[in-house]
Length: 381
Image (cartoon, rainbow, N blue to C red; front, side, top):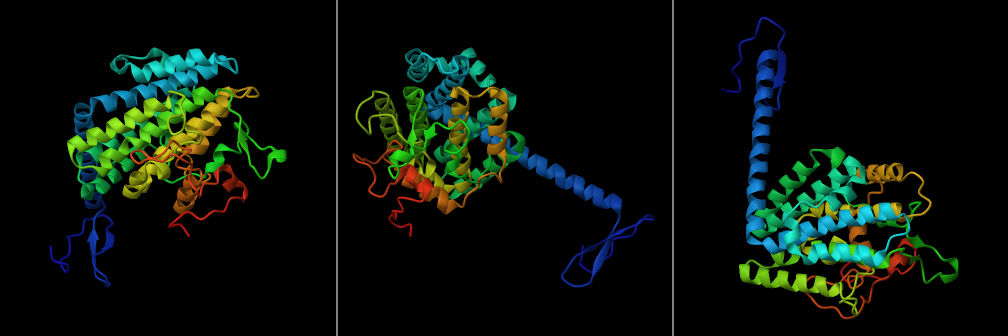
């Protein structure tokens, strides 16, 4: 249809629609407009269905190509459920050695990932249906992101990750936001495990974990989940990727050996800018979602273990509401990256593939939240 042609008007009211930058308009009937809108929605739904089907094929290929990685990721997700259940049942009286055995067996006995895990499911049920669904969907999103890195060239990844993020966010009630949150959310909530000791200042706040070994295990799994992305992003060849994943996996298990750093539990919560900088570079939105999940894990654990929580479900619902609110405690990207790096790559478990034997020269840890330790990180002035 030429721009100066007019559609025949219906006998009812018509709607004027501007077709160019001037004053020329065509009169489109409401019935025709409804048809156009219906077609647009149908095409959009078809496109989303095609994207979802493509994502499923990509994830299936990832499982087939990297079965060991997929199995350990699922085992870690289940271990987190067991961890929640143990904290909820124990209410400050958890037998740490017994629970640690349950957690480590899930990541060392890969065959368990092929069978249902009622204990893990019961642990997630402690969080309520919404909390459990958020974590389930975010873990699934993370595995899809890894599948994208494993199957697509770098030039194609951004579009695929955009689509994955948009599908994930299409259910905002059970999705974490794609913008980073302020790390102080870990330190100033009512049930935090970080204690400010005025006598120790300016040494800063200290973390008094009720179950340091269990917390260390969970942080080690967060390190692995982030570090596993690096070989898939850095290397293109299958052999190099498998060797890189072997390095990451071996380092993870050495962290469980209670040796000397870096072969020890992380002492700071691992975050994407420190452990998976390639993910941050490739797709900020995806990285923010994963970091928000790991921070929410920590606050949930604090609530479950704190002796003064009278109504755990109410407190958990509040935590979940805060983390799903894309306006609550959101920070600029530069602040998120700077804060993560100043909590020390080394203390967060060390780089995925590189080697660090001492802590970062420019790290300032918790002091960063209290106006101290204003060291300048190279390249970040």
